[in-house]
Length: 469
Ligand code: AMP
Ligand code: ZN
Image (tube, rainbow, N blue to C red; front, side):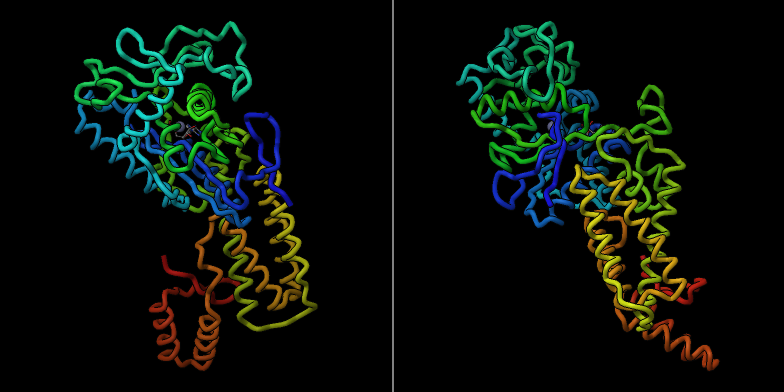
């Protein structure tokens, strides 16, 4: 089986073949740390985590780099041109961003380089562009990339602009602008009064980098001139990623990225989140009402290329699904623990699930199909077990399968499926003690289990161990 990914570059699903055998060099645009990340940002990070985890599940050796944009127009504005304020603000939001990643069980990137700590590499890259005549200096000392020097710009890359939209020679100094303003873009911004003491004295003059060059320099520093995958939200496609391609390829003469993979946006209760609407939703808002697992599942459940309308209803459903999965796991643990063998061994069912799950994800990470396979299998298995038709071997295989799938989904506590058989044995001894009205022994066993990290829960299916958080 081969993974197919939709490549924004070709506008097609393509077979994923990395540049180098089993190694994958992956870069994802990280946060601009001038305010708390919102839940939309986390959709992008959770999607990137899904992709990374799936590649690892397929035994690729993935190196993931995610940058921290801690100097740009927005961060400078938020810190009123005060460098120490810039540092304290950006570190605070970087910390919040990383905390959110850990709440949502997003695996760490290999590095999170900060723009302010990669200035030398940016200067070097701009020097190279100057040398090759792709860059030029404007009257105010800022350096610009000349889009008509780079033949593919806006024509055969991520965007296909019509020639009327291309205003080569005209310049744009803002980091963000729209397609109608496809101008020469800034690489290095000469110091202005409002920048205060936020500047670097370099061979390019006194100033600071433009946003786009930051990502080219940071990705190339850690991954080299050719990357397998570059991700981000769809808002990054233009101008950010188009500019990254232009400047990186102009400097290196090599194809910068093989697969560009973009996720669609998240909206909340049918509305685009925006400061002016006052409907920016943070992870902290949701965590008060829902478990991290349910939030992660809700962010994951919609295919990454479809817009996700996150609603209260979806989050509640996700909570229900998490409950169903954990219940199912506990039932399988109980069956396995009881050592009961009833009915024929049917390794077929867990294997079938395994196949359906993988087939779905191979198709451009079709997560909704993959999850449906899981829900369908659980429904069927629950009926079978009520009829006493699932034996301990099959229960064990289901547990292994869930564990395996969870490496990709990351929605269950990783060790949940590894509850030791001795725990079930102790629960059985406690049951015997209770039947014999030996309360002292029953309490002793309960306390021992508590020490081992388990609470006991009385459920309609009997007493089950629950790992303490
Ligand atoms: P920023 O901090 O704005 O630079 O964004 C960080 C990441 O979040 C980028 O990959 C953006 O494309 C992505 N992003 C921003 N807003 C949303 C949204 N509403 N839904 C999904 N991704 C988003
Ligand atoms: Zn970027």
